[in-house]
Image 1 (cartoon, rainbow, N blue to C red):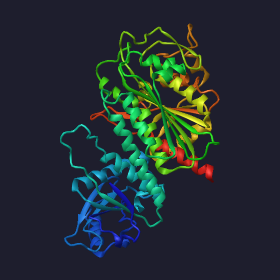
Image 2: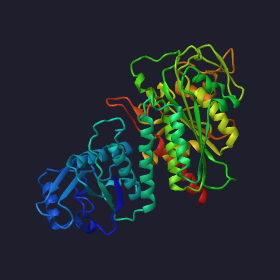
Image 3: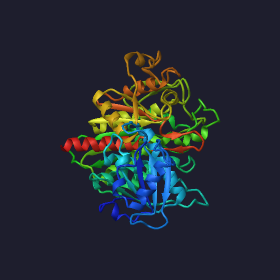
Image 4: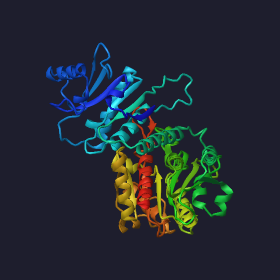
Length: 495
């Protein structure tokens, strides 16, 4: 799919179809710019009530001969004038537009943004179209012997207010980064082991001058005393790999932002074995680490003037004679002792060592981890918002704002002292599980113990990284949220 800005007005379009919005009792903001033949069709549709302007209503109008712009108009209902629409509602409308365009196989499409902006500006409206069109058009066909024909239209945006080419390109990079993350996330566990993802990460260094990658295998993790991390993969035949990706865009004197991703290439639950139903989805337990890899490439593509470290911690949790057990006591990298109550609460064990390593090695200005951590987060927030826990109010607000701006929302959960008490152990410093009660919060409380004084936030993406309903698929979230956060930090620094 190609995206561009229509610079010469509607008269310059060569599209097969022009998409315009029109509300109830309205013919739309671009009506006056259309040829008389198209105006007549729209007026007739409104007068005869074959198009009412109700939200998400779609009506295709076609003239017999090309009228100077294009033969086809796609009228899209935008509801009552002045009505507000949340991002999910707007994306539902855009999905309906894409579905119709694809069904008609239009190859060249112009979208007039004026009536799709709602409370946003033209750049945000274009970004939302790019994001949702990309999401709907995505296919994972790597292992398909017969592939569906790809739909690759050329999309141009027309706006009566200026559109930024820079922001358009940034939106395209974000869309392609989401595709990259989804490709990684869909990789099955028998092929996508930790070594596979280490190779993917290493390949980035050869393509981007400002990126460097180092891989920590079992020996390096042992040297760092990452016993909690290593315990998780002790029952697996596949060795762990922690990918450390550094982007130097602002010189060596500036402390980096740091992103740490959970990368369980497959999570059986270990000896605390998961139920068989739905276990196939546990290849998605690596979604956080996959997003970190894709995020680092996007930052390098945008050549942002900021330093960033991405740590993607890959491992596999399997039952075996050598596997760690409920009741075991583990000494983590920073000396904290942990009583294992449940081997299926493994993500926090990988992350606690990865966080303390990142904290001590890079001394980041802020540290954010992302993980498909708890089923409890799905119960609490469903598949709409990621759970956010943070020790820093400013950092939390910045992440929430980035989520709202990109339609990739998060919701802040508490981190009160009472929750910390729930993970206390009588035999060790901490327990790795406090049970089902408040599980997203107690998991976050556990991780917070390994962040020191570094501003830190945790995103539980168990409900947003993939969807189990019907056809199972990954989403690439929260990549757009995090990329917007990094871009905003960069712009604020340069202001």
